[in-house]
Structure formats: C-alpha cells, structure tokens
Image (cartoon, rainbow, N blue to C red; front, side, top):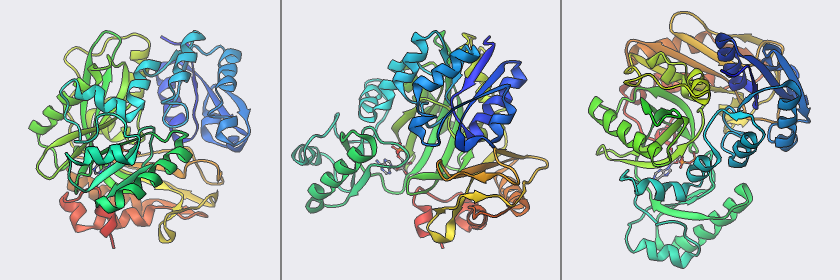
Length: 444
Ligand code: ADP
C-alpha cells in the first residue's frame, strides 16, 4: 500500500479523497493555489504545499510544480480527482516515469478514450452499439455531406477533444450544415486547441445513462450499475440518481455487459464511467468513456455500499477486485449539485463570502463539500460548492428526503441552485421518472 498520496486537485473532491486516505491509514499531501489557502482540503491534509497563483495553468494544471511538491514531500502516489489533470495522458506518463503511481489508467488508455472519435471506433470494433455517424473524423463540410447520405437529420457535430458539454452543434437541415460546421470547428479550436470534428445522428429525447465500472491490474472488470444523469442544463449535469427509473434489471445487465466490453477493449485499469444515450425504445448507444472518478460517483456509493475512492487506491496498489464482483444496488440515491450560481439570472456564477452556512444532516443524508461559514468562494474555479446526496428505500422516499434536506440547507451571502432543485424535486414529471435530457428546456 502507498504510504503517502498527493491529491492534485482542490475543492470537495480533494477533501473526499483525503477522507478515504485517512480511513485507510495513508498520509496525504494537499496542493493549493493562493486562492485556496482557506479551503478545507488544505487544513485536513497531513501536509500542504502552495503551488502557485490562482490561474489553473500556474497551479492545478502545472505539472512541474505538482511533481516538485510530490518529490519534496516524498509522496509515492498521486490522485488526480476529476477535471484539471485527471484525463491528461502525458501527466499519467510523467508520473509513471518519475516513479510515482498515478491513481488512474495509463497514458495509452487515457489517450484511446480521451479522443472521442477514436474511442467510438475502438468500442465499435468490440460490438458495443454506438450512435450511427461518421467513421472517424470529418475534415471538411463536403466530407460531412458524404456521411449525411447515410444518416437522417437532425445530426450533431461534436468536437473530438470536447468535454463539459462544449463544442457540440445540432444541425437540422442541409442548408444549415456548412455554416454550423464552420462554427463548430472555430468553437472547438478556441476551446480545445483542436478543431477535429465528428458527426453523429442526434438522438431525439434520449436519457443519459452511464455505467460505473472498476478494473484491476489482473484483468478483472466489474460494473456497479448505472446512474441517470438526464437532468442537464446546456449538456451539464445538475441532478443524478441511481438506479435509473428507466432501466430494468434486464437492461441493466445488458448495459453493464456493454460497459465491461468497452473497458476490456482497452484493458482498462481503475475506476471509469461508460456513458450511453438511451432512446425511448430502450436502445442504448455508447457515447464516451470517462477514465476517472466522476462528480456524481456518490449515488453509486450510496446504493452499493462501495467506497469508490478506496477501490481506486486498492487497484492502483495492485490488489485484486473481489471475486464475483460488486453487490447489486439497493434502494435509491439522488444527488443535487449545489452551485454558487443565480438560477434567476441564467445561472450566472455568484462567488463571494458565505455569511451563513447551515447544512442538512440526518438519516440518509450526505453532504460532500469543502466550504463553511466564513469561507469566501473564489471566482477562479468551477462554481460547485457542495453535493447534496440522499439515500432511501425507494425513489419516492428519496425525493421526499431530498426536499426536506434542501429545505434545511441555509446558505446566505451568495446565490445558489437550491431553489432550482426544490422546483425540480416537486415537478410531477420528475416525480414520475418521466424525463429526458430536454427536461429543463421546458421547465417553468
Ligand atoms: P461532454 O463530454 O461534453 O459531456 P458528451 O458526449 O458526454 O459530451 O455529451 C453530453 C450530452 O450531450 C449528453 O449527455 C446528451 O445530453 C447530449 N448528446 C451528446 N451526443 C448526443 C447525440 N448523438 N444525440 C442526442 N444528444 C446528445
């Protein structure tokens, strides 16, 4: 087992990882930017190293500084969390070359799944259903037109290097295609310094259903059921749950098998998520694989009783997964992302000092957060300040518990998404489980 893990991240996920390390008796090193001196992850770690000014490239994305911090403190492993360097193949490679274990997959695994178009080709070869579309990249509008001979409108242009819902454009007619193509390319170039695009059929009214998997270094890969992340705003997830109201045990086992096949196609090691679109006829299509821990991992933890960060650390240390796989999910879990944003002003970020903070607790309630009363939310990073997670015997009980927990949550000084979540939880369609990725577009 590792003796000391450096956490190359900030915020709630850094704290989440430190907590599990403590339970496992592993020492921890936090790194932080000057904007995060007051963050809880800095106080909770055994050691903390300031790695630079607020901008990501000068701190949390700065590989030489992070490695220097690992060397100075004698850390023998690095956990990247999510975002920042979590899916950076060269970071995984450099850690490896420096004799520090990267808690996650190898550079080649990250590379093969990080490029979405390449990932689609890889999994298609292993008989996993993918959304109909281009084989590989589409370099010119003319090439796109060729692909359009075989698929009907609407279609979606996607940036191969895309992420976080950026670099996607829906095209509904041939007249519009060339213009959208050029705009998508320019957008992808500016957001990802990579203008590569691919094209696929736009699935109408799908649900976003993803499967959590874990693979060890001995060739075992198991899944832990699904999460439904269809409640999205501009392709960004806001509410997640497990199990999905749309997935039967039979569909779960088929999707689980497809996810395992996906991971096996690259001999995957570590925790990962295979994302699918599920259409109204229960057809599912591979969308992408995330080679890291996800924000929404707690809902899976709640229904399976498995600490996923612990699993990541164990498999990175070479341990074998339990023979026979993981327990089947029990009950129902929901997560609401509490962001410092103003839902009445188009979800505009609302950083600043937290004057009052009272978080809910009690049976079946969990809050993962790095903030506290008196803390000032810096304007430099993502606006998520807490994840509110509930677990109950049934979906309706979980929703009731979430409503109660949201009522109890008091945050003053900044605007948050709490009032928005209260509305979602009370919405009849949400309560019935009858929704797709467009739910919020028609949300009053
Ligand atoms: P990102 O990596 O930016 O999150 P994804 O490929 O995971 O991008 O897609 C994000 C969301 O965009 C999906 O959850 C879904 O709502 C929507 N989406 C992506 N591809 C399609 C498609 N072919 N048809 C319909 N919706 C799609």
